[in-house]
Image 1: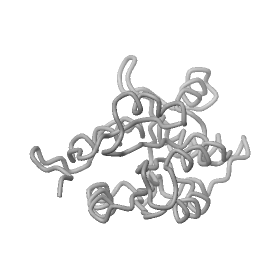
Image 2: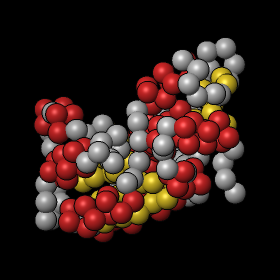
Image 3: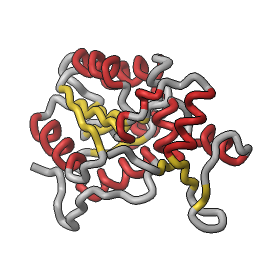
Length: 203
């Protein structure tokens, strides 16, 4: 069943632009929609978005039923299993995974993910190199990239934005922490992820 209403973040992912650009389209009346109360979150109905995409030459196959595509890249067997499991519980994400930078590159080209959860220290490639290549592709320049690592200090973590990363989680991190960061990066109004208070990704 196709979604009937989209958030600004979802429209941004579908059209391959930033959420700020969608907000400008909305505020200028270029794309029709409504707000959830005075000054509330913007909502764009399916027919309005479809009309806008046709008029601007944006392929309609980008809808993909409104699913957010998430790529998880980690060579640690624990994290490559637990992260997709956690994210898939909501049923609102299409989650794929890779254990090497090489495989990740192929999946990025094939799926153009909205969000990449990327371990910095992969066995075959530095995650910063992967991030740089993703951001250089026109099709994925607006993809959000969340760095994860247990081996960098605070100073090095603060420099991750220089490589194009949009966020960072230090291993081990909790399920709630992961859910909150995914929610923030995808700019969804309500996170449907299961969030047990005590569950963590620690083996």
